[in-house]
Image 1 (cartoon, rainbow, N blue to C red):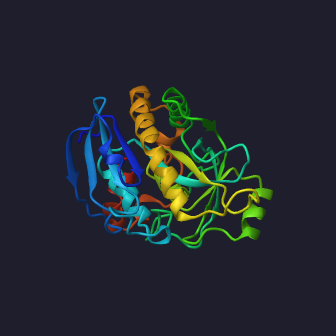
Image 2: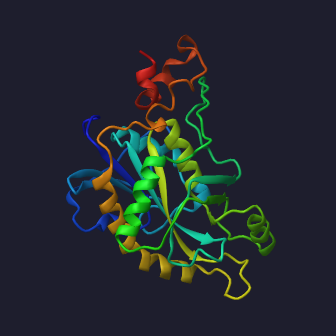
Length: 289
């Protein structure tokens, strides 16, 4: 793939590689300095745009959230020339107004994970990217409008709290998070957003509410069976929204995501080990010249 060509990455659950209209489909198996991505990437064209799909948990949903190799997944996308990543996820609703089946485009995150690797900058290099606004505002707006266009009930904006899992919340935790004012709860998207920002890739989430976690006294507590049932219903909406969104992505990225590392790298070039420079070349190469 040419680095100048528009390339969209999609990270999501099983079935999204069967998006209607996907043409010229082939698979690419990648190795990265951080290990292997969750699975082979499925690459094709949708609406004339290159799309690279990665099943976040591997085919058959084999990898639990804490064991995901987020660095390899995002690095693999960067290596393929991806400039935009759409992360599709199932989440719990923490608000009465967000009903199961609704689409949420969060614009903030709270991190409640425990020690997941979520930076490329180790091994002799230090970088601090701006993360006050953790998703791409342009991509988020496009996704929200696309969701409405295909008939989804869309909540534009909101806070996603990312927990470690794989267990769902206790009732006490769920009530605490609600007191914090969060809108949705999940286990995967925040490390993706952090790493995408370091890789200068625009990132946003399409989150489908599948349940009310366990805070809602009038409905049954969350169960994986109900999660999968509602997610299956939402899959078609997600595919249609992605197909609509990619038609409206700008030819040139003018958001802050595109140059997130411009002032973020602290370590002087001469102090960065050559191996680190080589390993991170797809990410930092333009700043090492």
